[in-house]
Amino acid sequence: MDITAYKVFVSQLENLADDQVVDVSEKLRLRHNSSTVQKLAAERFSEAGCCPHCRSSRVAKHGLARGSQRFRCGECRKTFSALTGTPFHRMRNKDKLLENAACMSDGLSLKKTAARLGITVTRAFTWRHKFLSFLNRQKPQALTGMVEADETMFPQSFKGQRSDMPRMSKRHGGPCKDGTGLEKVAVMVVVQRGTRKAYDHVMADGSTPSLTEALRPALGTDAVLVTDGNAGYLTVAAELKVKHERFVSSYHGKGGKGPAHVQSVNRYDSTLKTWMARFRGVASKYLANYLGWRRLLDRFEDALTPQQFMFHAMRVNYLTPGTNT
Ligand SMILES: [Zn+2]
Figure 1 (cartoon, helix red, strand yellow):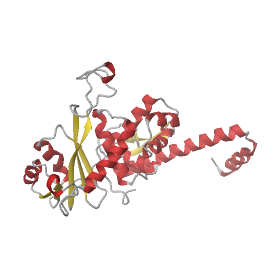
Figure 2 (figure 1 turned 180 degrees about the horizontal axis):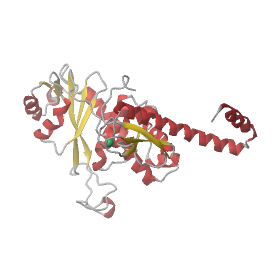
Figure 3 (figure 1 turned 180 degrees about the vertical axis):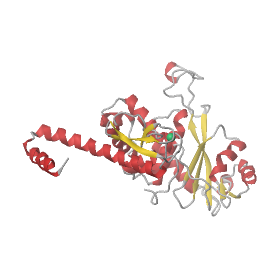
Figure 4 (figure 1 turned 30 degrees about the horizontal axis):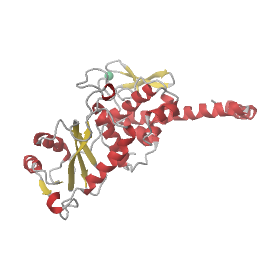
């Protein structure tokens, strides 16, 4: 809009009725959110600077489609947008993405998110998992220094699954034992002491080979693995050729033995469990998504802006906050 037209437009705002002011404000807010998402997408695209289909750098602008810039590859001739190759490709209501990111920064339930965005709970669920699909993969690798590791358990859950269930749903009178006897999912949780670098991995079981494979990417060559008395970790440390400090809680107490303690990882786990409680049990097949969500929130000490949430949700790589945000 040129400056003259803009001045006319602004002068006309005076004539708006109160309800029209509300309506225009809402439209402007969505317009602003939409352009913020476009900017974040453009930023991500310019980092990659290549065609998402064939990786060629011969890319040129190719007009606008529904308000967003299209590009065309000079090599494979395919067209794409800055969001192609991200979980947000082909999503409708892009003007609501930033608001969804805000709900996720606050860890809101699906019901509250759906109400705030004016979408169905089913769609809020789909969106949530689109936002988590890249976060799921963002984990720090090769941690150094004192690296505390511990396993934690989550109840096995088939929530939301109506078919292919290995056992009867509780609601339909299937077996339900309290406490012991229920199936559990084992998760390896790792924290580099003195940092907010947390790593986790959903394991097939709690066996020593599973512990080893879970820890392999997490440990740098000079890491000192710190664990409780689980004898399996002796084998893990030998296999992965890392130094190992351990304590036996029945002998040394839960506080550990000097620097051999797992208090950082215990703290992380306790926050994780408290935070997860709001979802009233998550389906095991989505557990890794929720773990990724929690890792991101923890890195930002639960104070992410919606823009920061969106920034990370568009990227596969683990980027350190502060240097890339
Ligand atoms: Zn191409």
